[in-house]
Image (cartoon, rainbow, N blue to C red; front, side, top):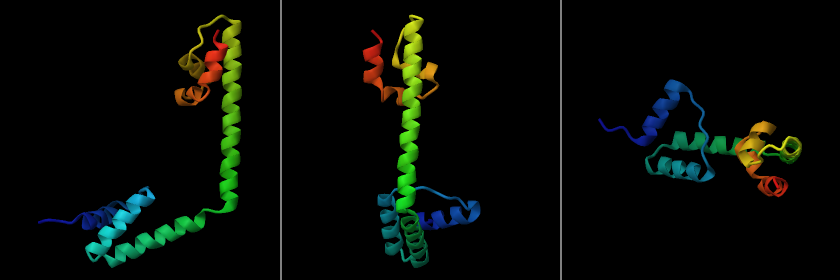
Length: 122
């Protein structure tokens, strides 16, 4: 018995009641598959979810997200600067990894300040 991908999707969703995150491009592909296989009900549900998502993006939320990101970046930068200064005072080896560990930030966050770290490691 051959079950199509759309039917599998419907079965999985009914059984597990899951929520998935897909890109806009993936959504369009899924909608096209629905059209091709006569899945009008699923297509309509996907379209409704897309509209809900688009309506949820407001100017206020966008500004709040930008503000929160800026504050998070500033906090990370201050932690990194403080860690570099402390490590210099105690003559510790300054690398991106050691600064990240000392500042308690991720390696990728510290990597964003690579120029500052390498400049102050001398």
